[in-house]
Length: 167
Ligand SMILES: Cc1cc2nc3c(=O)[nH]c(=O)nc-3n(C[C@H](O)[C@H](O)[C@H](O)COP(=O)(O)O)c2cc1C
Image (cartoon, rainbow, N blue to C red; front, side, top):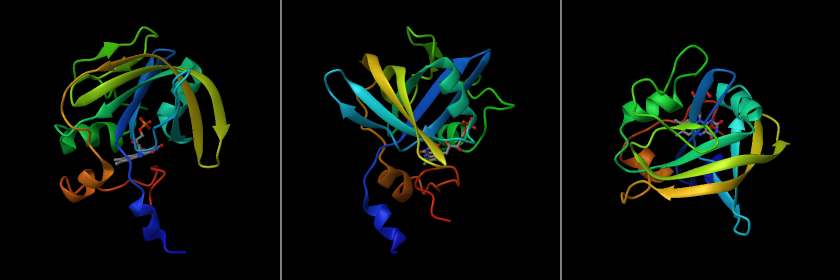
């Protein structure tokens, strides 16, 4: 199999976040997709080992921000290369909450989606969470950060927990 074929699939980059039982968690993902329009629903794939997946399952809700091109590697590193288990990723950023009580960082974000969890599909290493969008908001007029831009301009790497990781 030519695994470089997967690199041709375009995607954006997002931060998905949630809070439950006193724990705030969030991580970078490239696997958010709008799956329906009426009602609006979004799917995300989150690794079972990521702290964020357990918190989403407990919260039965998540916030999803679309990362914009103002994002730097400090921001990506904070959400994409560290784990929420012993570290509060929101501490160094202005943090707001959705109406469902989910934390999100408005900085470096083009848009916000507040989602209620309606279904979870076990796809092996990852859980596919289906969320119904209860609210959506534009946060900046900056261009969205694509995975392609992340690789080519920010020279970013892909960690093992990402769906797109090629070991
Ligand atoms: C560019 C990039 C893309 C990523 N895509 C995904 C993804 O689609 N799904 C996923 O579960 N993790 C993905 N990750 C990895 C998580 O962000 C990473 O494992 C994070 O540290 C998990 O944090 P947590 O343990 O606090 O949940 C990605 C990371 C980066 C940097």
